[in-house]
Image (cartoon, rainbow over all chains, first blue to last red; front, top):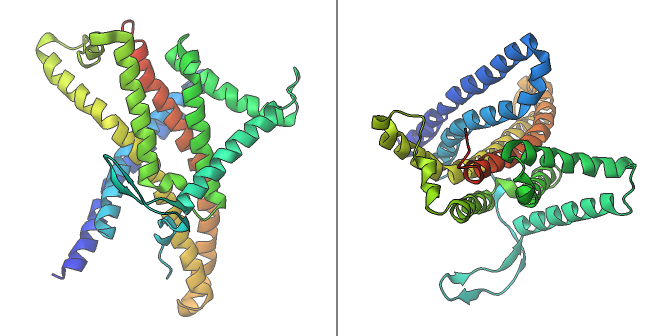
Length: 74
Length: 257
């Protein structure tokens, strides 16, 4: 296989790590909504936790994204 | 199609002569577009905060209310996460939050986003990490190592969990750096890719298919622009929250959890 093509395919495959981040962030926000609708009065105080959880889950996907970009431009 | 990575290139605006520093070696001094974006961000932050506190009244006007909301948000954050010691760390968290927020938001207006440069976000990550380590050692001395000794786990498991805790502690500056960098770079690449589709469709690069591509891509660009404004605020906020959480770990080490 042409090395250039293999590199681009590899960069694309590396982006698959973002699937997990998508599932994780979706799960966090979905669970938050489910909880917030059951007890709306407690929802406001948990916004901070919500974003921290989403950020932590997203960071792992970003690692895969950065890896993909590094393979692409290197 | 135009190169979506072109926007991240560092360009020299004013070239200054190189200097040779003792340990570092040769340093290329130049006033670049990254430098310019950061300077504008600095001027915007200082100018905005001077404007809102200039002639402060007991009953705030419109501008003062904006500044007080921003101030109160970070004040509440440090207070609720770090506790009554939080006031001491408020200046650091507030300055890092406003500076990142200004750079993120200016990236939406200028053609260059300072926080999409790895060197800049890495500097913020390292500063935060160094502050956490220094505060931890100054406040707790050797007791700082208790951070890696989980008392909640069974005794047999403690070295293993402690080792994992240690490595996740070392990963903190890297995740702080890459989260901000990846979010800003990814968002701007996506924005430019869809904007490139619009341009391609307009000049007829996609043929008659362009009639379909043009409205879809234009709608996507508008939607992504709105999303980017949210992300710009959110990433600055998340950076501030995580700084508070990491500081809380070492400030309240003795009576935590």
